[in-house]
Length: 292
Ligand code: UTP
Image (cartoon, rainbow, N blue to C red; front, side, top):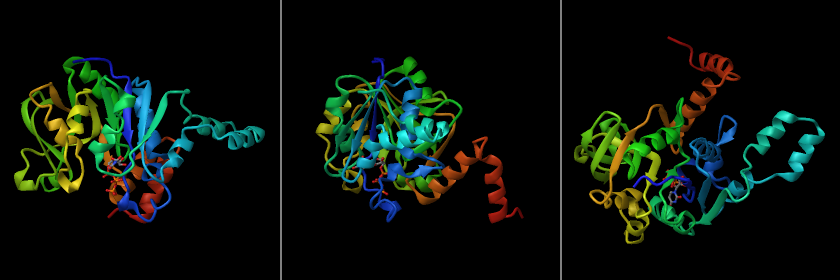
């Protein structure tokens, strides 16, 4: 169960209610961190890990995403006429080779598990990755590349995990941990959004997964779970015992861009990590929040 992972699913069918009114006419995944939309970070992370095909599960009001990954002929011509090479390169960077990106639509936002299930025919009978664009990981080696390296060793199903404060467990899928070597933790059980007292540990899943195609059969039969949504973790829990399943502690810092404060933090962290912006960003921070 170590087949090559050539395809990544990126679900963007959610409503983005926490960012209204910004997300009324603009998909949440098109909100920029510094100068790039969240979805582009996710696509670039997949490509950097050697993924060849990306499947984006969209929904109503998300067509700007398809335009973003296509040529913008008039804009490109105008930039070429003005000899603005840097802007032209930035515009063209988000155009993938023909056929490398496919879209399917989740007609109703029935949950992450349902969104992934919508991609089943485009993924086919092969292992695949899932990236949630609102979870960003700032790391020397991109998170998915780290996971694929670990996958070469253990195969099966892998979810990126991190320890969270116990009072936050109700925001995550939380692992019941078996054998644990500090990097890979065997998954004995999985609980979606447990109250702090009920959480089997504080090791929690973030938005990066490598899954075997049998997950689609589990999702097919999955009824609504926490929040009335079809949960990916509920279907993953059913693979425990049938297939290898590990939590992978990635190296790097994760930012929850689905949350306002997490988004602000990500914007600052990414700006500070860039040579062209770090000094100016530091100045702004000192001005807005002077030390002491
Ligand atoms: P979130 O729960 O963070 O996104 O889902 P949301 O539902 O859009 O945001 P809020 O909570 O209303 O503010 C994580 C990812 O899963 C996708 C989202 O688009 C996001 O990328 N998702 C969620 C779907 O594709 N379909 C769904 O039914 C739910």
